[in-house]
Amino acid sequence: MEVQLRIAMIGGGYVGLVSGTCFAEFGTDVAIVETNPDRLSALREGRIPIYEPGLDRLVAENVTAGRLTFGDDMAAAIRGADAVFLAVGTPSRRGDGQADTSYVYAAVEQIARVAEGYTVIVTKSTVPVGTGREIARIVRATRPDLDFDVASNPEFLREGNAIADFMRPDRVIIGTDQSKPGGTQRAQDILRKLYRPLYLLETPMVFTGLETAELIKYSANSFLAMKITFINEIADLCEKVGADVIDVARSIGLDGRIGKKFLHPSPGFGGSCFPKDTRALTAIGRNAGSPVRLIETTVAVNEARMQAMAQRIIAFAGGDVSGLTIGVLGLTFKPETDDMREAASITILDQLDRAGAHIRAFDPAGMQTARTVLPQSVIYCSDAVEVAEGADIVVVLTEWNEFRSLSPYKLKNRMKGRKIADLRNIWDPQAIREAGFDYISLGRPDTG
Ligand code: NAD
Image: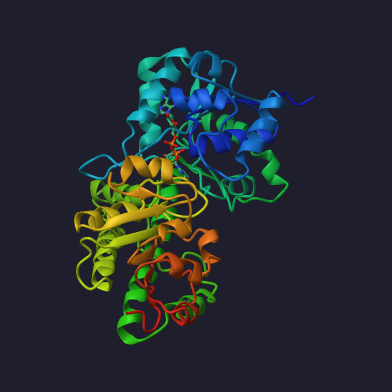
């Protein structure tokens, strides 16, 4: 009879809650430790503190089955656990862009103080190269007697599709300390068992060293951010030379070496991962004396782009938005999430607000958080059509599906002006122009 596996997941945010719940769904006992009292009480009351499609049902089922619990007692959660996963935040440090590992190290000290038997401490958080070794040093210093291993198991799930991404990943990366005789095997065996359900799907498993696993995550995210930035610059070029970025993206994407994903022009990448991970990789490179110049440029181009997008809206309005009403559709950094971290809307709305525009906005999931990060003067509406009320311009910032199917005539009836700036290319230029709008989008011919 197989022994029941038990894990503790430290941090019940996007990654900890989704991956903890999915491990429970695989049949493992999971104790999630969360220190934020609001998040914890929501979870204990059966409410999901984040927006992630399908997560409420999966959490409820696993709580009912007795495999998933929530608490703030570290000692109770890690007692008898085969592995302790760290899924706490690693935001950018102000100033130098390095990842702030203080939450990770604080949690590690707590774990080390209360751990009882052999413990594998696994980083699921995205952590800079060298963090695994520093964790080992902290544990040894705090508890010289403790038998433990450190592993790196970076997470690649995407918000909005997180459950499917966790259940059917492209690959699983397991990094262990290969310089430690024997230690590698023991930690690897536990992680292999935890991920056993994925072996049935023939998910590629990469067993590697700690530093390699840590770098894989930053390399993957930075490459994707670079790809987005590449097509954004090509979109700008298309506008200048009368080419169509949609056809360019589709055609280059049909080349299997390039691939069609992440080739959609946008007002710039945002979110909880790409901005901070690109900055962190450039810091890792600089500190190691091996600058990653392509990513340094990616960071700079992306930051400039968000500013440029605000200027573009102002130019489209005739050079001055003061006193104008701008209706904004979508605020989150992408659809199907409530995550506002580093969303392009923050930079763009801030500039429009400073330029004197009256902003009306709607987002299907992000408005609660938006209120805490956007200018105070923004008026929040209950749907897309209400955004258009009296608006001189409507701007699309996030490509939620419900905006795609919106009739331009419905907007027109409510608007004062006739201008639409579609910064996600969700609408067909011809149809919108036929409806009587002055329309700009990204990288398509005659986009103004
Ligand atoms: P998050 O802020 O949503 O969640 C982190 C949680 O950890 C918070 O709820 C916080 O209260 C809790 N926490 C902090 N210290 C704690 C402690 N000592 N004990 C218990 N709980 C503690 O962050 P997130 O988006 O889930 O990201 C977590 C990590 O995963 C980051 O390193 C991120 O880069 C990485 N990651 C995120 C995504 C994503 O899409 N969000 C994808 C892959 C990897």
